[in-house]
Amino acid sequence: MSDCIFCKIVDKQIPSASVYEDADMLCFKDINPSAPVHLLLIPKVHFDSLAHAQAEHETLLGKMMLKVPQIAQEAGLTNGFKTLINTGKDGGQEVFHLHIHIMGTPA
Ligand code: 5GP
Ligand code: ZN
Image (cartoon, rainbow, N blue to C red; front, side, top):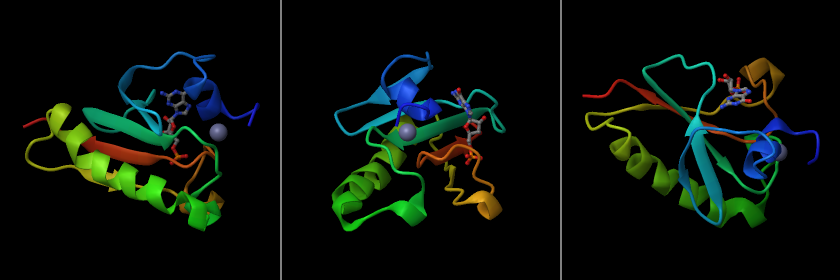
């Protein structure tokens, strides 16, 4: 989606501090962190939110969830971390491209 800031990050039109990337997903540092480590894990394909996920995204979402602990570990969050998915305006979502917040303090 051409006017989506996270699609532009996927396309490298906007720079980001990337910590992980594969064919399906990208993880980068939140520009306004609310924890010492604050990462955003996004699918490369655009869909607006968890409420917009379709059956075709089932495998992708599974891959992303299984990648979260590995990314957290590599970011130094060896004793645990928080995950957050804001969904919709009333769910506090500000960027309408699905993303998983990964937050914590390195051990
Ligand atoms: P939401 O409220 O939608 O769950 O979270 C959106 C997050 O995206 C916020 O934590 C915000 O700081 C982050 N963010 C917004 N624009 C950018 C950007 O251009 N680059 C990066 N790295 N993070 C962004
Ligand atoms: Zn997008």
